[in-house]
Amino acid sequence: MDCNRMDCSRRDFLKQACLSTVAMSVPAFIAPRRARAQNAAASKSRRPNIIFLVDDQHRWDALGIVNPRVKTPNLDRLAREGIHFDQAVCQAPMCVPSRYSFMLGLYPSQIGIRMNMPGLSDKDLPGVPLPEQLRCAGYQTAGFGKTHWSSKGCSTRGFEVRAIGQNRQGELYEKGAIMMTDVNPRGYNAYMEETKPFGPGEEEVPGYIGMTSKLQEEDHRDGFVTRQCLDFLDKQRDESRPLFLYLSFLKPHAGMNVPAGFEDLYNLDEIPDIQQPPWSEDRSGHANVNRQPPFLANRHRRYISYWKQSTPRERKQMVLRYWANCSWIDDMFGRVLDKCREKGILDNCLIMYTSDHGEMLGDQYYRFNKYCLYEASVRVPLIVSGSWLEASNRGIVDSRPAELVDILPTFLQAANAASDPRLPGSSLLGPVQRKAAFCEYHSGKGAEQLGPSYMWRSKDWKLIIYLDGKIENAVAEQNCIKGELYHLADDPREWNNLFDDPRHSGRREAMTRELLMHLAVAWGRFPGGKNGCR
Image (cartoon, rainbow, N blue to C red; front, side, top):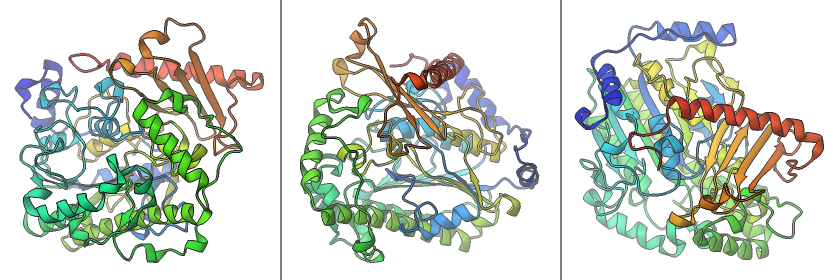
């Protein structure tokens, strides 16, 4: 990334990050025990290696530490040895805006990427991506797997070593990256052929029905990425610098073509059926089929048509394959962590695991994938672990309203690197900074863009505010502001909307004021990129 192509404020900040590492004062934890742990960790003479593990569309409750039926022993171990943030949310329930958000530390509307749309060129980025900031801070940066920058031919944005399980001719090519078609074109083509019946994004009904894959692991895109990562650790590690290792998988996102063996970890008779609200039609408010672009609306109708008529055994098989995907991902994470342990990388290391968003998996009236602000979609697993954390800081469940924009300042604090004070996030190793967590959802395409939906969520309550109708007409029409209010403590499935219940009007108005003030402060401090929000 060329500093000369940035606006002055961003160029000055990057210059500061590149030329000096600022020793940051370590804020105290709320609990004295955690304050002692962090202060002790910060006093270490060497900055930690940093490992960032990410997967795609992983529900917050598809972890063994939350649901013992799910087999994820490696991620569970990280949680037992670190901090499990059990109330974390993403900033947008879809891949492209969520990943831009946590890589830049900004909300999607500040970046100008609100939907799964084409991404930004290098020169149009409104901030400095995480890998570039850590490279400037003196880290060797190696990235394997999905970033979904969606800007064909963009740079690797700070990754010195880069491998992606995609086609060099596709939209996800990054200049300088090793692509799967460079190394294993046969395997890539075999994978595309196996998943062709799954439809766009592998998310049509056949993609969720799934199958036991006939391919070897190395012919899967995530298998390719794992092999490249292990080879890097064996052959390209620069031991003169601390390491930033990013490993990001495409699963457990549909399709459910699970490599052989992982389904055997589960007994179909022990898998629960998906639970449905007592509705005769979709009542999903901000995510109602009438508020979706035609492509998603028609897909949702196909979901309802099929899964409503399916047998309990078929639905349980679908859940089993999703969990088996989670177990496969966990196994690959485990092998990479074992290699890091063998190489001594874990001796002084900070490890973080999360997902870009969740998966509805049939919740909320046969709704699948994401594209909404309901719990299964916006909540994400989030774990901070590693030897850099002291033993007294292990095995903790932290229920603060954490957000994925907190990832970047957390890593920069660990690296003793400067963080832009205009960012909305704050380090997860510091005190609680907000009363609730924010997420935004945008739908439509071009002139058909619909009014936005905004979420403000605490552990016990969730508010969703949305503008009905097309965005260009919404503010001019009367009664266009609608909403949903859920008491999560009593109604965790979000089946009972209390927004218009007069008994909860005080709660609704208080949360609305909090949401508006939060956005006013965040957007006022960093209003958007140099070309403004798009």
